[in-house]
Image 1 (spheres, rainbow, N blue to C red):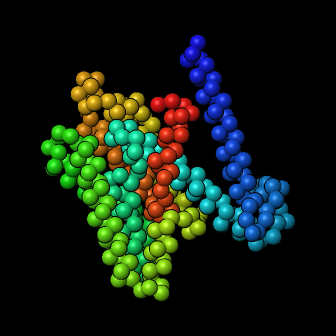
Image 2 (cartoon, helix red, strand yellow; image 1 turned 90 degrees about the vertical axis):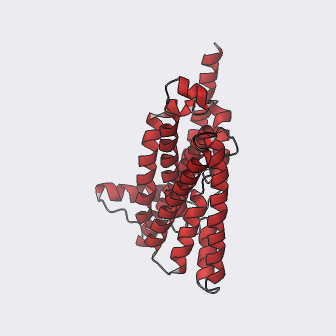
Image 3 (cartoon, helix red, strand yellow; image 1 turned 60 degrees about the vertical axis):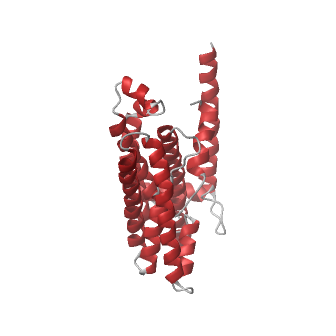
Amino acid sequence: MKKKKREKKNAVWFAALLIIFGAVFFLSFMWGKYSISPGEIFRMIAERITGAESGIPAAKEKVFFNIRLPRVLGACIVGGGLAVSGCVYQGTMRNPMVSPDILGATAGAGMGAALALLLSWSAAAVQLTAFVFGLAAVALTYYFAHIISRKAGMILSLVLTGIVMSALFEAGISLMKYVADPYSKLPAITFWLMGSLAAVVPSSLPLLVIPLVIGLIPLILLKWRINLLSLPDEEALAMGINITRMRIIVIVCATLITSSIVAVGGLIGWVGLIIPHMARIVAGP
């Protein structure tokens, strides 16, 4: 009886949150200095699908398709990706205070972007460099943690090594800011590190979507085994889980998602830490 009551309550919460999300998603297209009515939105979408003339000014179509639509979709992907990564890391590390940047992905991506901006590379090169540096930072963290732990206390070694690696890459960011031109390069680096979706354009979405899908599919398929990683290692081993292999898969997938998000949106905090706890309040562990 209690189980059915809880399932009904969860369904009500899920429906309410879905309605709120849909309302905010739709209203986001209309808010702004350049107002767009709901009817104009539907007409512009219908024009793209059917090819029929909508009669909407070209300026409004450009604002909708080139600016607001990519940013709103990017916000949905960024929020969802960071929430998934945070939830996975918190369960794997058995620590409710863990966030997606715990292993150095955020700091590594930040240093990669700062280096690319310092060298005046293109926007695409900045995103790619940030993505690669984010992956490299986590790879270094896992490598050194594996050496230090010698397969004993791996989680503690990962967390501590991640903190050290984050501090190292943040020092690199400070160095980039110190040597950057204060009138051109330094403002660009500072603005990127603040985190923003203002630079999201249609061409940025594949860099968000593809890593998200690649990282999300294994996590969904292995979700019940991932739950076992929250148990002590001895219990997980007794249930037939190869904890080393499973932990590597989880870290790789979560890092792939986090690095792609940071590469496009910059340093965005709190989402990966807070949203998993809000989800547990609604739906349970």
